[in-house]
Length: 346
Picture 1 (cartoon, rainbow, N blue to C red):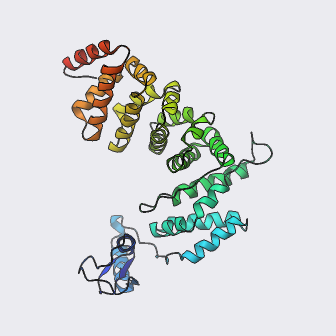
Picture 2: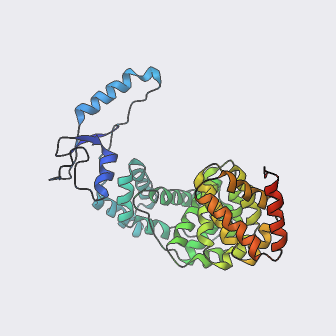
Picture 3: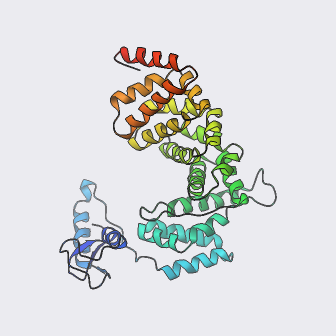
C-alpha cells in the first residue's frame, strides 16, 4: 500500500486498487461483500504513518519512502483546463498541468479522457503556417510535449481515448513520424494507430508520404521495445485494408517481420507480428514476398514446434496459405517438408 483509504465498511485498501474496483461498477466491499451505502473513501492516516515508519526503518535495505499522496482531480477542474485549451488561454501551462494530473493516477487519466481533453490536444497538433520544413525548436518541443501528453492520458487501462484528426493534424503527425526524435516518432505512431482504429482513416493515413516506411524502420529498432510495439500495433490496424497490405509488402515489411520473429521478446509482440504476416499472406504480393524470403519457412516451422497459443495458429495459417495459394505452391510444400525433416529448423 502507498495510499491507504477506508470504505464505509471499515475495511482499508490501497486507493488505486479500490478506486479501480469502484470504477468498474462494483458496489460491494471486496473483503466483506457488504453492499456499500457510500462509495466515498477516507484516507487512513494512521496506517499510512505506520507504512512510512516501516519504510524509514528499512531504508538500508533499499526501501524508499512513499511520496505524499495527492487528492484526486475533480472533473469540473479538468473541464476548466479543457476550456482554457479550447480558447487558447495559457496553453503551454495547461498542457503541463494535464500531464502532471495524468501521471498521478489512472483515475486522473480517466477523468481527463472524460473531459474531452484528448480531442482538444489533438487539435493543437498542426504544422506552423510558415517554415513547415524547418520549424523552430520551441515549436517542436511544445508539440512533442503535446504528443507525450496524449499518449500518457490514453494509457489508462479502463478507458481508451478515441478522437478524430483533420488533414492538418495528420500532416503534422506525419512530420514527427519522419523527422522527430525516436520518442516523438513512437508517440506519433501511437496517436496515428488510435486515430486509425477509431475511424475510417486507415487508407488516408497510409497515403501520407513515408508513414508505412517509417513504421518498418521502427520495427527494426531492436533496442527500443516501445518503438517495436508501437509499430506493430499501428501496422496491424492499417493492414485491415488490402491496399495497405500491398504497401507494406512494397516497403520491405515482410523482411522486417520475418527477421523480427526469432528475437521477439514478448508473447504479445510475437503474436502481433505473426498476425500481420497472416494478413500479408492473404494477398498474392504478400505470399510471393514471404515465400521468397530464405528465412520465412524455417522460422515459421520453428514457431509451430516451439511457440504456444495464438502464435502457433498464426504460423500454421501462414504456412497453409503459402503452400496452397502461392504461385510456386508445390515448391513451398517441398521446402516445408525438407525443412521439417531436418528436425531442427533454423
